[in-house]
Image 1 (tube, rainbow, N blue to C red):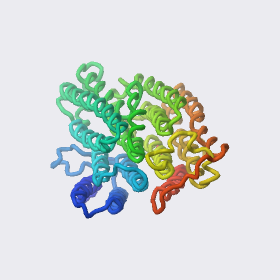
Image 2: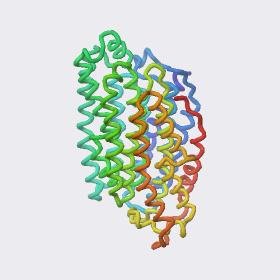
Image 3: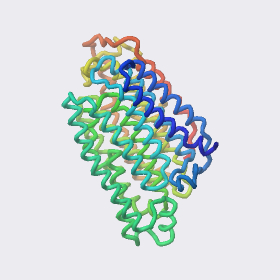
Image 4: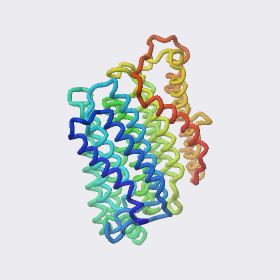
Length: 470
């Protein structure tokens, strides 16, 4: 029963996705019913994940799956964040498609399939399982980005994402081949044992394999120099899909990244210097791109690159011997709440065909819709790292971890990057509060996104009080 409970959230999302796929075949089901069912399935999976009790490490059905899956407190929390992202993205989608065309009944089915792949990513304990999970997630996300074939913008976004994603997948497979050549196994435990016995830098196959796998993961999290795709893809995707990609995908891949690096202290030590420079370049490249944007989706996409840089600081500073991942998970939860919140707000404020998407489109919002403007301001303050929000505490834990790990310069650069980012976050607040309204900001009634926005605004403060074990 304990093993069953460990994988039940994965089974629930997979079965839920298949159920929605079958339901979508019947024309009698309308989009409102499908939306409520999709939201309910995410809530159900979240509840199951919340009830799972995991110790330091559990291998569910070890003989059946041959040790392919491992669950722990780290994977449980990562799964909770992923399912919460799916839940609030589904709420945003319910509102978004009351004002925008292009809805298909399989939309929520694809979101559940993507979530299933993400949960499998967090649990995977060997490289081939990782690849299968990565492809399940990626194929579903590709479909979500480009399902509206009548839109040139969507088609362009999915083409860029698909082509570059295919290269990343190829790098991962080739890296897996090299890792197998060097360790005679694809299991993390065996690879770590081989590295401990023979060393890492003395084994060219392991070095090459780790390099290719890290390149693939850096692409998935939009780290420098593999970040160029993210602005165009996020801009081309529908708002709820952009929210889901920016939060759930980032959570799943960083969970994998952390699990991969803690295979061995020698493996982490071999790449830590490179990750140091990648994190710095990622933060400042993202800031420079974000400062130049006038489109909110593109600005948020560029700021997501910056947050990837902060998370890479957490990876650089992790302790492979006593790994908890607390700081990384806390930052992911804080970032997810803020990002989902602002995208949920944009889902009902954006209007038909996303007509309100630039900074100037939100001039005077605080005078017309004060509560929505207040929620958006809270999310922006959290992203900028202003206390007492969860974003501030997340950056505090990340930078404190860097200082404790001896990476003083990296921590200082992280603080400087955070100060620099305030410019483009405060720019929207200035537009909402210090300019005259040019629109009445009419929105559709009887939608769920405003409620989701309010809940996420409260979560930004609630998460900040949660204790973290670094």
